[in-house]
Every structure is written in C-alpha cells, then in structure tokens.
Amino acid sequence: MTKIGIIRCEKNEERCPMTNCLKCLMETREGFADYEECVPVGVFTCRCPGDNFSTLVRTLKAKGAEVVHVPTCSFANKQGGEWFLGDGLCMKVDDLLERAANDADIPVVKGTAHLPRDYQPEVVK
Ligand code: SF4
Ligand code: SF4
Image (cartoon, rainbow, N blue to C red):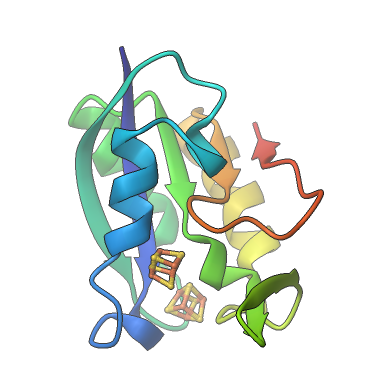
C-alpha cells in the first residue's frame, strides 16, 4: 500500500476540488497506475512563489507519504476536452520538483489525473 501526498497549485484551488485526482488515486489509474494499491496521506496547496514547496514535501513525508504527486494541471493544459503537455498552471514546476526531491529525499511525480496522451508520469528523485 503506497502512501501518497499531493501538492496542488493555489491558482485553481477554488475551481477544482481535485475530484479526478482523488478518483484516479483511489482507482490506481492514470498517474497512479504503477501502484498496486495506494492511499492518500494528505493534500497541501502551494502558494506563489513556491518557496515553501520543499517544506510541504518534507511535511508530507513526515506524515507518512512515500511519494508526492503534483496534479496534471500544474504542467499541462486542456484544449477541446483533451489535455496537452505544457502551458500548465506553474511555469517552474520542474525546478520546484527537483529541489524538493533533493531536499526531502523522496520521489516527486508529475501527474495525477487525465494525463496527456502518450505521457508517462515523470518521477523526479
Ligand atoms: S489535475 Fe485535474 S482534477 Fe486534479 S486538480 Fe488539476 S484540474 Fe483538478
Ligand atoms: S509556485 Fe507554481 S505551483 Fe506554486 S502556487 Fe505558484 S504557480 Fe502554483
């Protein structure tokens, strides 16, 4: 049973209650398809400029998270009902993940729900 933390972006915290993120986690689909079983440990919201992102990852780890995911909308955009890589909510998501994975010594994964076609969730360690 893999314990998962999620860090969402503040830019859509009042528009999306992470319905599909949580559904995919519970059903081990899309960004969570590599896990046999998984359970949520908790969710945090990142706030610009993201200086506390690593602290949030460390706290999720302290609460038991073995992996932290960032939602697909952080790095992908929706056009005509389909999601495409790029133009997501966060322009520096790769830097945040790189730093956090090093600081917290825990894998951070790009992707949760509605992955862009042919995209394999990128694991930053
Ligand atoms: S990835 Fe989709 S379901 Fe998850 S927070 Fe973003 S828009 Fe909502
Ligand atoms: S730093 Fe990125 S992920 Fe964090 S709130 Fe700002 S845009 Fe969103």
